[in-house]
Amino acid sequence: MKLWWVGIVISLVFSKWANGFVEHSFNETELSFLEAYGESKVGANYLMVGLTLIPGAGAKRAVCLDGTLPGYHLHRGYGSGANSWLIQLEGGGWCNSIRNCVYRKTTRRGSSRFMEKNIAFTGILSNKAEENPDFFNWNRVKLRYCDGASFTGDGEDKARQLQFRGQRIWLSAMEDLKSKGMRYAKQTLLSGCSAGGLAAILHCDEFRGLFPRTTKVKCLSDAGLFLDAPDVSGGRTLRNLYNGVVGLQGVQHNLPRVCTNHLDPTSCFFPQNLIANIQTPLFILNAAYDSWQIQSSLAPASADPAGFWHECRLNHAKCTPSQINFLQGDANFEELF
Image 1 (tube, rainbow, N blue to C red):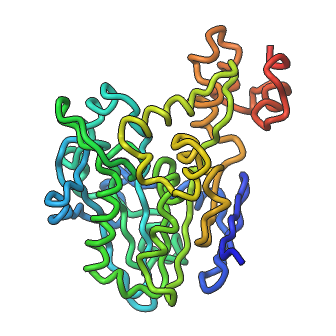
Image 2 (image 1 turned 90 degrees about the horizontal axis):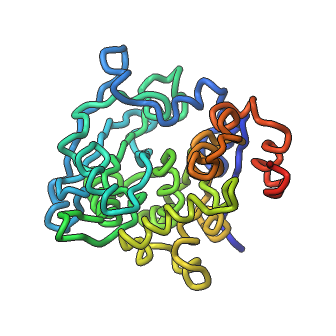
């Protein structure tokens, strides 16, 4: 019998961590904090956590796009949470072309040279019991995202001095954290938001394999359920983007074989083709109307030259009934115009 379950939450969220995790309901304010951190929090009354570069990563070629060392932020747990670990994979889109990746390596999304040296731990990473009652005293880690392929690529472009080493970064980070006590964890949660949420799905079973069977392991994908669906012109905007990511960065070699045995690699970068075969308990949190997917995948400006979707794209409350039907998968293209 398969040992997996998937919870898909739309708009209003209630989470239940079965088999040993705490049961807790999230309201809309708490949900906004799941990925919350950053420069806007600096100076406020938040816990600031320093960046740790992974010293042994360079020898394994587990490096950012520009060749710099990857890193993470770790705040130690205590008390009842001393042997519990929460890993959050940072999000931040993808780079699907040489041009995009060359630009990306000049930012914090492609180089640790540009990463903040300290970030605020809020929401699911917070150390405040009133804000984060389930995980406030766990060992909490934010793994920084600097590869542009959801921690799955493995390749390089020597001419442009680009390193596509997301999979190696993932492995190197997990090895380093295990050496710092994660190997003794009694319960662990792998989480991520957006591109990091996709990474949490892609690496969920791999994460389970890092621990003995006695360790309780679960995964949480926040806003990572990216859909392989046609855009408003009938094209495949997101599939085209993912096809570039997979082909450029050598992602195909690190995708689950249970998927690539019968589907093309790009299809296996989409969560909808992966979740049914994930053996580890997986919790999926996604909005009914994901603003990024509406604006950048389903109704991008490139697919809507006449601007018919402009208002709906910016605010789904202004969508027409036929547009809402399309977003819900109930309309064909002819009904939209």
